[in-house]
Length: 516
Ligand code: UD1
Ligand code: CA
Image (tube, rainbow, N blue to C red; front, side):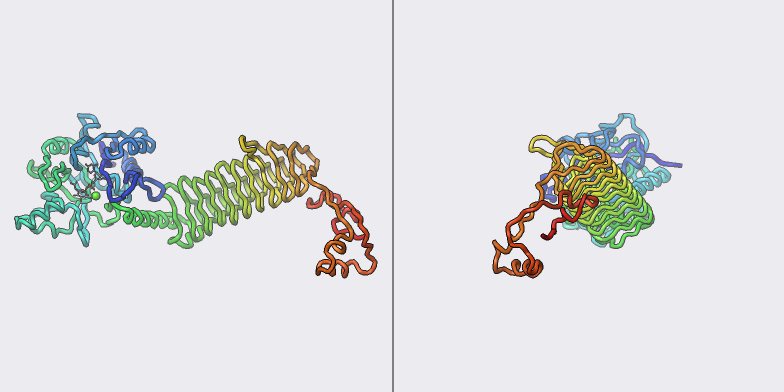
């Protein structure tokens, strides 16, 4: 039998002052998701009929975030009456008035709580017939948590807030011992909807903080002869909330440890779990190897048999099977099967690298479709470009896509070859099977089968060193190389018209090192 609660209410109206932040606490992020996002994710996965998030502090920002994450979630506003009880009541008021069944209450700042725990809570609550089931934990130091007070039979009698427990100790009442109880209230509960609604209507604010406490529902339910159960969880991380930046980092690290462990158990080799950061939504295929210092962020997906790292940050990037990404930074990029990226590559949004393509060292790409087997191996900026299958872009090529006002596109056709140190001043269209000579500044079309040469011709001036650098080591070296026969008269020649491209027409007359 599967247990789906009627509703989950997530309390997220509190201030979170200890974060000392302009950002509302529940919008701080770990594992690529806001704290509230983690709570909503866990809640949604237990398939409740209704999901409500109670907001108040920084209402607009938090409500907008809720709507973005889950447009079907209900945003419930808490009024000026303070406390978890009032927050819960405001959540209930946003749900159908005739709601029956189980209502789970969780908190927006407890990010490691899992769906499994919520499903367990629901199942135990429903099978035990309790009106209230509270998740509790035994802590070595119960700090300021609410204490779980049990009767002689071991049943939960009430939950007493720390400040109230302290007051009882000071007054030496029959509850003086409560402050020493180590079983604490996690703040996560399952309630019978009708019991919750009627009990909350009775809860007052006569306590140390002057707030309406949700925890008072326990004592009211007991008074009315209802059963209250506790569900003790062993995994203390799941009930830990974030109150300050230290806890944010601590829980973030533990969440990451869990995520990394999950992927190792799924067949991913992680060489150094301690320096590997994987966001909650990332997926990774089997036999992929993650080397040290890697961050896989956002909606990144990695295929099987891939190699990532070392020293790489991939954000919202898709890496296909068998690809390798070494010392790279990528964002909103797609890397095809068997393709290679790096070392020292920067792939910006809109980069799509085809199967077995290559983006090599010191290459930056943006809005660039680089076809199957195409290569951009060294020292290149490639923006707003389509490079077709098998094309090769020489070292130091710049795709000059921006004229200061507009961006323009460059196309390089199939199996074309752009010589080193060229600048392609967009818009440029280089056809299939074309060549660009090294060092060219290309400003127009290049047709199929053509070579474009767009640079100054080389001029060699004989005897220049002897005349203008006489007495230097260079002049001596020239003299030694030339020997006695050298004519030291001024004479010029042209050379190397298309040098730098492998099949340029080169002969004895046009080599750049010709002698006379
Ligand atoms: C609460 C419990 C305490 C428990 C602890 C676990 C009560 C009275 N006490 O204490 O027994 O051990 O959680 O962490 O419930 N919130 C609202 N509106 C409010 C006040 C709080 O939405 O007016 C939300 C907060 O955003 C937060 C959650 O409720 O997500 C808990 O509030 P917090 O003030 O941290 O409760 P505690 O005093 O820590
Ligand atoms: Ca708290």
